[in-house]
Length: 185
Figure 1 (spheres, one colour):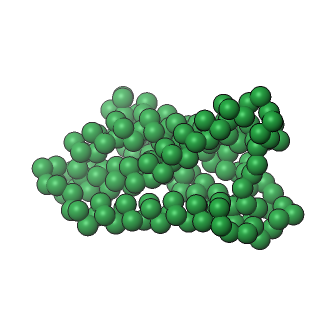
Figure 2 (cartoon, rainbow, N blue to C red):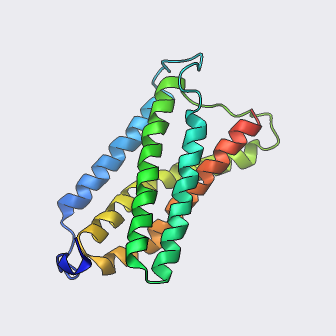
């Protein structure tokens, strides 16, 4: 659909039901992850099935990071179609990551980091910020996408200024957390 065919909703507020739905979906996703981490017994404790999921997760985060950076570059150059394509790619990679991440936790449970490592204080702080900001990022990403897809570009731009750095941080730190877990186990 060409940009000129989008509804002119720039001065219309977003229906509260849309925001509420996005927040409920985000809360349910976060609750599912919390359940898988703290309450669900892994179904493949021996780790024999899909052992490469953590690597896949890191690759998907890296691809999302690249797409986000390209999207930022394209919007700064006013290349709207390329920006939109890059952001859809980032959303796709992040969505596939979430499915893979949930599958990994369902099968293998939590990956433990060596708490005796001198890197533990840094790792713990990085992981805590990554987790907190990923919870914050999910509804922001969904709302930012909704604003764009509904043609509310001024509101989209305002929210994207906050969504972009948080989403980028979560994607980058996801790769770093994987690398630290792999290297220092």
